[in-house]
Length: 116
Image 1 (cartoon, rainbow, N blue to C red):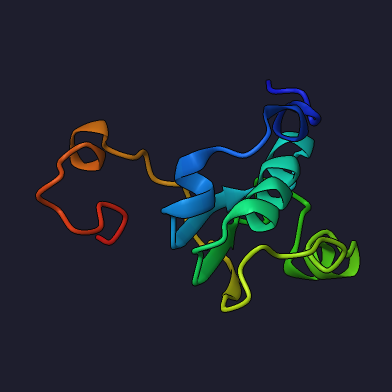
Image 2 (cartoon, one colour):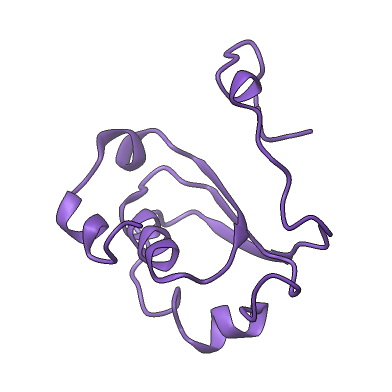
């Protein structure tokens, strides 16, 4: 597990700061290291246009959409991108999240490997 301070200590990462324009964070369970990364991302991603957080099925976590907003996790940070939107969804996946395919994720002929 990554220390919650890892991302603060890492400093700006060029690809996140200048190139990433979409983030989809699936099976979000509200763990300290996941929250830390999400905060780091929105504070540094200058080109991001859309952030989608898909919370894990309630069977697998007590973290909810309400918790994400009422804890002010994302309202308390200054977003680097001035033109961005965020959607929060809840997963209904009974298995707790699909296994991602490394082969599909590294196939550069696919425009977006996360769309299925």
